Length: 115
Image: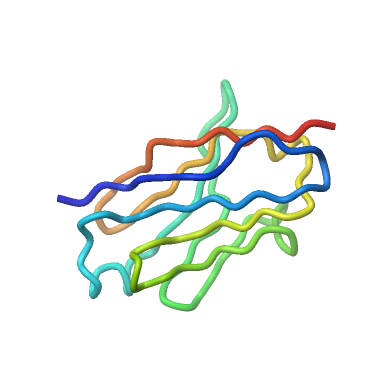
């Protein structure tokens, strides 16, 4: 049984950095390496929006985070990371990791950027 466990997040000042992690517990290596794994975020009253995805070594980013956020993965640890740099107050949201193949979400983690 696969489940996604997130860590990281918190409160940071504008211009600062945070790193989020997501462990895909129970996912076999062959699935993890080929799956499209993503990070999404959601603010109150809004739809959950895509932030970044990674499939193999191919990455994709929402325009607003290009050049600031980096998605990466560690196949051995079954883990993805979202390195968030030059954070802005508008990046404040609950962030979720996602597995496309399993249609599973992480538990969510709050990121708050103060101005």
